[in-house]
Image 1 (cartoon, helix red, strand yellow):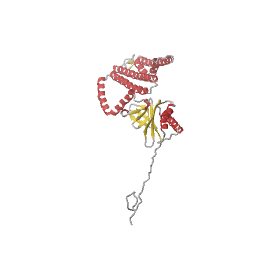
Image 2 (tube, one colour; image 1 turned 90 degrees about the horizontal axis):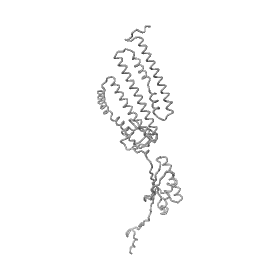
Image 3 (cartoon, one colour; image 1 turned 120 degrees about the vertical axis):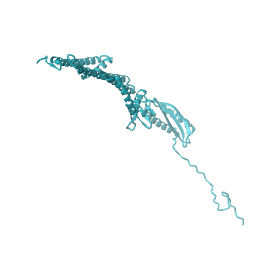
Image 4 (cartoon, one colour; image 1 turned 45 degrees about the vertical axis):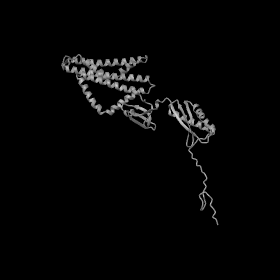
Length: 367
């Protein structure tokens, strides 16, 4: 074999050298990468810093195609190539480097978001905020890398950006509702009118927030079905967020029958207060003889639940009702219920056949 034979303006020896450099470069880079990942991962288990963990995350995202492009570029150095081919190899390498930079950037954003969510695990709204911010940062990163790649290929980036701006305006006009929902999702993320896990009421629909997306928010209703709201419509509605409730104010009424003695009526507020105050997680506010009802003497009581949970409120109200019923029974106080009393009075009826006015005795006729 004649190593000096020329193929495509390069000797066979030059081609063999180039191929050997490509193989050696790939093997060396892959080996160095594997060794670096192993050692840094071992070091990460021994230190409290996050930098070594981030380095492992980024090195793990190094693509084989990127190593192959570096090997091709180095292998082409000993060769005499046409200027166009050398330019293509350089452009492909730059594009590969930009793609790899995008993967590293995405990895860094994801790692930072994961660490921040872990540090704020007590805040359920953080996952929404970090997810949305991560999407925005990733989109910005890939946009910059795309423009850089186009610039390296000789494209007029300024003219391209201007054309994108005109086209983007037309798309924005056509997709107003979609963009409104997207901005609504960002408003939900940053303003936090609610977070995942909150129980909310929107109009006549209620449920627990399960997911906040770029276009819609999904709520699991009490009856089990999933409610889907567009973000823009949701923010334009009046939302009652029970997840932000620190205390639950409870008002209830009860009535005693007419005929209950004043002494017993005076005992009712004290009786109700004692039943409320003996329970945990309650704060008594007031109990008053409110009004004379149509069929009852009405009392109104107010107390506060120190926990907002609805199930806890229902358990407490049940205990209060049972306690009041027992105390009324002991005090011989009767609960009122709707009644009507019919009063009947006697009426005098004139049975005279004739003569005299109604109600007067009949006069005797003279002989």
